Length: 144
Length: 183
Image (cartoon, rainbow over all chains, first blue to last red):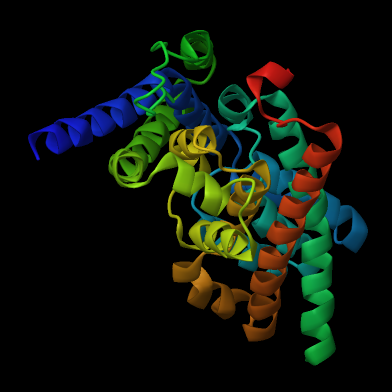
């Protein structure tokens, strides 16, 4: 039993060391998140949309990529954009890219998982965000 | 993350020190350019830090417990090369239920990878995180039932397909995409 306790303590210690090892990188990402949130305002993001569906869907994906914050904020902002006449395709791409893609966390992802994996995962996520947004809107409109 | 496999300890090394230094320099430059906005940025950063600290504690305890209780061979069988459809369900379910910023989960995922977790499941896990169960009522309020339902279903489907694509690419290239050796 004593050896089990010692072993569990060691597991926790190693897990803690794992977090501590990437702490500088994580703090850097947190710092960047703060800068993005303070310097890239909701108004700036909203001003990117033109009302043209295809253009706005791409813009929505890119805007979601650079935006940071709680997913809830993306829903509120998405609701505001809908009210301003931005297409649901664009808003869907925006809220999806917000949570699945992140320019800010790319350095940490590449450091931890490697550049190849990070590039492939983000490329796939980018493409599937557009496809998922478009197909979701089609399906919802088909039923309504 | 440092190795938590007790059999093969890895040398401890801080990662991203230069990156953090760069961000601090950026803050210093921005402070002279836009003082008020930079202070706001610092406040936002502290808010994010407050948000992720509890999650990091959860990650430490989960990673420690996983390593202590799970036999690496069993884990590799459930989430590694010989894993079946249930592994996809675990990856997708874990993604849907996981909370907090994506990067808070990196250390634990990296640790599991060392135990044999496949890249396809990791890809699926990360994308499935787009389904935010506690926020579904909010999404329904803003975008309606049908849209919320279809978006959630398609996110899970897209996560699975992306995982399969990564698996296929790895199988063709015959190596792990994120292996440091492969770079």
